[in-house]
Image (cartoon, rainbow, N blue to C red):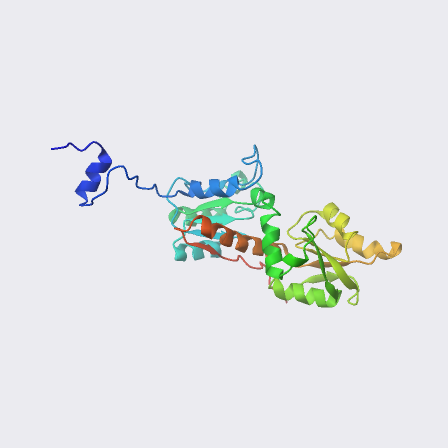
Length: 287
């Protein structure tokens, strides 16, 4: 009688299972495996420094479900729990500052309650910001172009510039409001301004980059602006005869399509895991 040569064989036999010899039972995919898969798709990854780190939880646990989102809000966390997901991939910080530093939040009731919620349900929060923007053509931008139906208008050399059929700034503003799902957009420039070349700098890339692109297009669509940078450049443009349009749709709404695209990108790469997108939504209401 042959002795069982491994603990695995013993456990299989004890369970009443028959496994052919030399067949390797695949290891369950861990959350860290998913993280590595996302990072490895970026050029020259991994990098020495990035904000794309695990913020809460044990990434070595088996992944049971994945939620992608712009922000891991309390509502998004609750939604993930309902879906049975234990990995939330967020684009922006979880704890109210760029580096997710928490020393200054010790004892804070909001921070403590949010962290306890994550820990209670064993949820891992991983930020996917730098590497996702570094993906081919920028993962966020690809999602935005798909949301707008503008992939065919995108400049091959500068995919964040779109050459669209002629329209007015007024009509373009209403289109952005509808396609980004915003309750309102903030607009600068004459409503009748003719727009053919439109720049897309979603999120918050900073005034200098916004202004540099604004000089090259008819209108610029952004997530958010500092009101003493790009907005004042647009307002002062009349002194140089440089009339441009500026449409601000909000940071969260402008980048959310890129995290929805991440769910579609991930799904065929982890077919055994349910991947969902949960929008964190516009944080404001308007009165």
